[in-house]
Length: 341
Image (cartoon, rainbow, N blue to C red):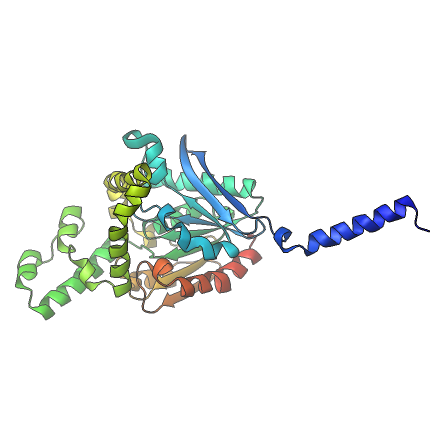
């Protein structure tokens, strides 16, 4: 005959077995947005994922000011493998909308320190030893600066649309456009921009590269056109947020152009104190793949992996989603977990 205590133990054991077997409870999902105090101001942060036990991946957006909340659906497949964190940087997107034109200290050094503060906050809040950092375009400059400041916070750094230096970018872009003008017999461009103008002066650089879209990867052209075409609908659905996105890009661009011109990672970041993954569209001319690959081979890091995605350009993480996610899950995730993520 079973005693009351024995019956209780049998029931308790069955309940535990049931809970462990339940797919719904196999991993606790997370979905939150909040304003986090960073560097003395509140900045917008979104945290989403299917399982809190997954490694944390902080996306450092490009632009400057190219916040990623309108593309939230593109990150949903990532959330099966990572807890994905989106951050509207100081002076951008929702964070710009919080303070507006009065946003102080919009410069690379302060934004990188904000990112370090956020990374430490994420480690503590999500109970992780280290996190993964992914920087796109301008965000790759911010992310590299973050790694240089506090390498111990990061299990891996992933660069895509990797910026190397203003000089490398401007020289390569000018060379591509010069070759095109000569091939096309574009005497108007040749008369305006030969001999080569001083590309360190932003006004001259932007004038000379004004038709860069004509030499971009087809996928990049299509992506940029889709963003432009979709903006009116975004504005209609989210009038304040979409306006803040637009105004934040203009505000950030104005305040950060000096830092962009001064960028020279081979000099300022000759080494990285974590695993470095470069996942680059092979046809990127916005942040030229040639320069990114050269920097990858030059930089010193405890572990390095290069993935070039064919038929993709600057926005490979958006336009070649399957190949990009395969690199994240097959190469970055296991290496980062082995390194403390």
